[in-house]
Amino acid sequence: MKLISKKKKRLFFLLTSLLILQCFMISGKADYCEAAASPYSKIATPKTSTYRYIFKTYSTSSTKVGKLYKGSGATILKTGTTWLKVKSGSVTGYIKKANVASGTKLETYAKKNNFPKKLTVNVNSLIVRAKASKTASIVTGISKGETYKMISETTKWAKISTEDGTGYVSKEYVTCSYALTDAVKITAASSSSSSTSKSSSSAYSKVALCTADSLRVRKSGSTSAQIVGYMNPKTSATILSKGSSWTKIQSGTVIGYIKNNYYVTGSKVPTYASKAGVTEKVTLKTALNVRSAASTSSKKIGGASKGSSYTLKKEFTNWVSIAYGSKTGYLKKSYVTIAYDFETAVPVSQSSSSSDTSSGSGSATGSNIVNYALQFKGNPYVYGGTSLTNGCDCSGFTQAIYSHFGYTISRVSRDQANNGTSVSLSSLQKGDLIFYANTSGTINHVAIYIGNSQVIHASNEKVGIIVSTYTYRTPVKAVRIIK
Image (cartoon, rainbow, N blue to C red; front, side, top):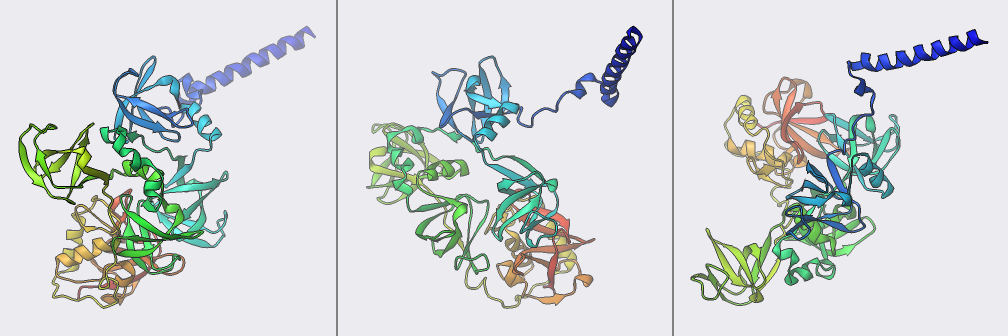
């Protein structure tokens, strides 16, 4: 019996030694056997049902520079004994360490409180399916860099909502994370009594502020309906009527329908407006002198008429400073109103929605088109935009490129598909336009063929203007504009 006991001890010792040795053999370092670090080790979220303040310095008596709401996140820049230096959106400051969770504690807290999650596409093109199965019917395709809110998830699949409908994507090709929002910056304007009405739900009860990176306004409540306008996160609209899935709105000259899950209204508007960087404007109730400082005894630098508006720079107790030409001017606050300067939807003009073929006395070769287009690689994508430098969408990009060479083509992709001359995908030449469609067969994207099986296109707001293989999505048509 003693002999057996000794053998057991030797066997236990050998097995333990082998396990320790294996840890070293994996990398040469024993600590590689430890659990992987949390992806949230440098992220902090407040432990609260409302919000926690971010201070200018590590003292609660210092200026409050931001509010970190429940569900928000901040990057940890520096860790102290009691305080953390953090950055969230445009807010940088200090928050009490005891008031936040990070690392695995953040993950536990987020899960317990059902924080919303998002996913980011990691591959050039990913199929969205009607069910959580690789054999299910296709809803649409999404592109690399695009981010979507997760509705639900299983071990292998995530359910998301796209403009073409709700569907499932394989988690094998995406990165999933908690959709933590940015802190809200505190300015003199947001802490003063005059801004109280801006934060009330009644002030924005009929306002719809777009929360999507890009949003189409449609002629009726259907994803297959004609596009009549475009909205971005700085665009607001007046709510005319609301249904179970779609809301009828008016924004500027655009009247149409947007999906209910792509906007906020009421008391949520100021928070989202601040996050989106919407500027505030000052409108005069009466004619006023514009002064060089916040004092009636200061020098008069000009005048402002009743009803005129200016960009707000800063709000004080009794004064506001404004952008007055190239100068900073001051107005008495009791004689002005302050409101967010929202953008209005960009309309799709009648001319741009026609199906006429391209026109104009253009003159260029395919190589000319390609070389010019490649100059703008890396520039931003702006939904509804047509600026090659400040931002454009897919069809705005192609339209602007061809306009440079004297060609006039339609404004939206599905109409550009009727311009020029149709060509086979097997006989593509540089400068040809290649089109892509959703599952209903409606063309919703366009790119320029640059040769070597590649295209350049304004993809989305995450990646901007990029070069991809022309089969990153399944092309459905190609046309040649150059004659």
